[in-house]
Amino acid sequence: MNANKRGALIVFEGCDRCGKTTQNRQLFELLTGKGVDTMQTNFPDRSTAIGNVINHYLQNNQELSDEVIHLLFSANRWERMNSIKKDLLAGTTVICDRYAYSGVAYSVAKGLDFNWCWAPEIGLLKPDAVFYLKATPDELTTRGNYGEERYEKLDFQRKVGQIFDRFSEKDSSYWHTFEASKSQQELHAQIAIVAEKIVMQSAEKPLGKLA
Ligand code: 2DT
Image (cartoon, rainbow, N blue to C red; front, side, top):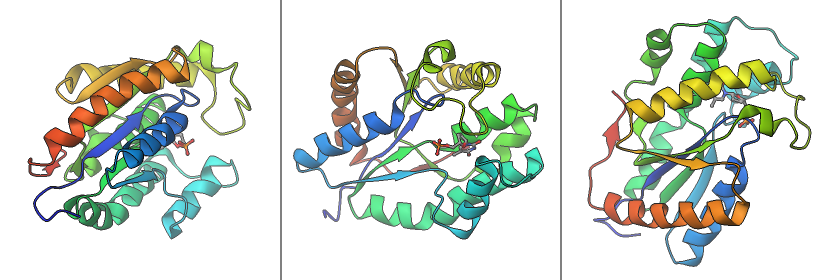
């Protein structure tokens, strides 16, 4: 821990099965190996009471209106904010699998209004970088166990991808797009270069909030 230097908040986003989880783990291992104090987290965080409801919903065991589940996903981030902030300020870099952008992308793909969806995310910690693993959903259906969870339908994933594209254009100052169809190693190498830069640059910057 270093009293003056904070950790970076790095988020991975992308459609289902784009390889986020693998890249998240590989980045964690790389940074840890280089002596950067790093932790991994993910949203939804299914370990909380709200996360438990979300988990039932995702496994098709519980029906909830699109609005209700949207707000629960957002609340699930809010309930983690204080502890993530504490870790960042203590100098720990946090690598996060999905964030507010997934929240908006999946709900807008269901037909909800973009601005309505973004509203509850305002004020959450702003990531220092979003690593967007961009894929053609058609490629992803060939990956293992595709279709088991609620959202793994081709048309739906295409819509989700379009919203991520919209964010990557709008928030291009901190969104970094990577081609998910590249090999794991190639992707990792590209991500590592950007991540190391972000960790260094973020150390001196104040934490931001989503606006
Ligand atoms: P995982 O397969 O990554 O566990 O995600 N989702 C996620 C939303 O609809 N809103 C959100 O705010 C978040 C974080 C994306 C489970 C699914 O939940 C979706 C896929």
